[in-house]
Amino acid sequence: DGGITQSPKYLFRKEGQNVTLSCEQNLNHDAMYWYRQDPGQGLRLIYYSQIVNDFQKGDIAEGYSVSREKKESFPLTVTSAQKNPTAFYLCASNPPDRKNIQYFGAGTRLSVL
Amino acid sequence: GQQLNQSPQSMFIQEGEDVSMNCTSSSIFNTWLWYKQEPGEGPVLLIALYKAGELTSNGRLTAQFGITRKDSFLNISASIPSDVGIYFCAGLASGSARQLTFGSGTQLTVLP
Image 1: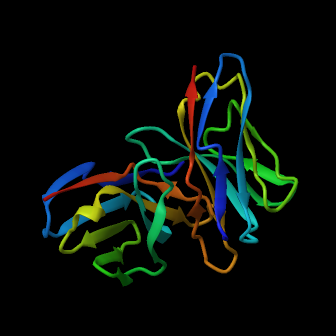
Image 2: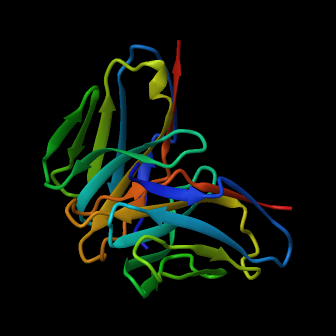
């Protein structure tokens, strides 16, 4: 099946621990995005990448890091510097032939132990 | 970043009723998107709008791109129980390098 796959579905982080959320797509999309969603709020952009080996900070990048070594993969690391990591994290990608549209994965819910 | 004002925040309606929700922005947008999100899932695209005045339907859903390019609305006709979820608007402002701005969502509950 084609699509955007996020894993794991649920993730727990201990104090001082870094955790990595996976996002893989087999849609041949160039642009990929990471958003954070908190209850009752819109999606906030963490990082985005337009092409391999290049990425840009979004509105709330502090405490997060990303890499884009392959077109298909855009992992997000939530570092220990992120003091309030509990949230629903969504990955998205943008097809070059459908102007400005983003398609989303099913999300990862991160909680702090 | 840009701000979108989405209203209402929540709605409780009877099955069969029509629903209307809207988004407004202080900036001019050149794309408006409407998504639906169900609990524990990612948003699913419902409708995309690209031109001022554009009116687009997807089944019982109709959305319009406002003439001023600063607003958009979504209508749902003859609501059914599976319409329950959070509806988000998203917009792309001129020169924003494909970064969408999202509204805070409208939580829709359909009562039988």
